[in-house]
Length: 367
Image (tube, rainbow, N blue to C red):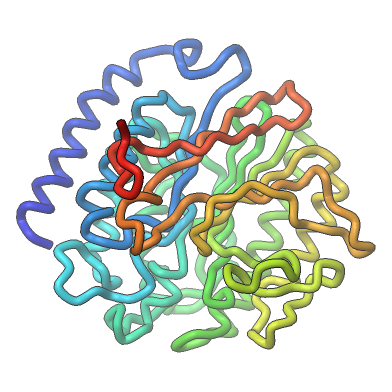
């Protein structure tokens, strides 16, 4: 990384810390909420280029910080899928990539939550990414981002952690410490390590053993979350993961094609998602209250209801939320975020606002 980039990142952190100290002194009632209401920020699949790393993401973080959010969540992918020769910011899976991300997350005033993405671990075995061991890079992320039970960010949030050694690392069974859970004002949130690239069953070096262990860990953590939410009487659940698993037969350009009734993948690729989706569907139906599933991966902002039961009936209490993500052709124009207004007393609990960062409008400049 060039010296100028390091200085820019350091300046971002220092400036953010000064502003955050003032923000942290305020009580909860002064936040962007009303009574039990509050707001959170969702983003991911960023940055993918020098422009996004040096301009777009700092602009986005400044915009997030201006809203006094309860917390923010990045749903994975700290870089593009392949390294870019000549880039001045890290584009392979070297340690500097994760250091850059820590600088971004810790410049956020509110607690910053992160769940890994395929571009920052499963795809690190690609030659263009440095030919790393995927398991070793995930082990490194676990140490860099998840070594404590607290979130990142300048104000920290304590979380429940999946500490059972159900996942696989370089040296065998290891805790899935990236899987987190927390409840805020009557709503339960959970992160799950679910990945693109067939959930580590395809691409350069598929790892079925790693997938099998992590898949069972994800299912167990997800089921525990629904059980805890029932006991707590939570008004809703929000699940955050990286992968777009595909939900139906509607859009093969952005996600795997899937029979919406059986949830079996139909495009001939290894299916790293069906077992999880079947388990999720059962829990959503039994829960009966709102469930949001937030993901990135296919880089297309949308909020819809694609989940069906085995008879083909839409699950009305389930909402898929896909965050903005990189579009290289648009430069900075898709470096934006989603503001979620949370009202535990309302029928739908969550409502969504696309937040277009004015300084990132490169295709349609701000007036």
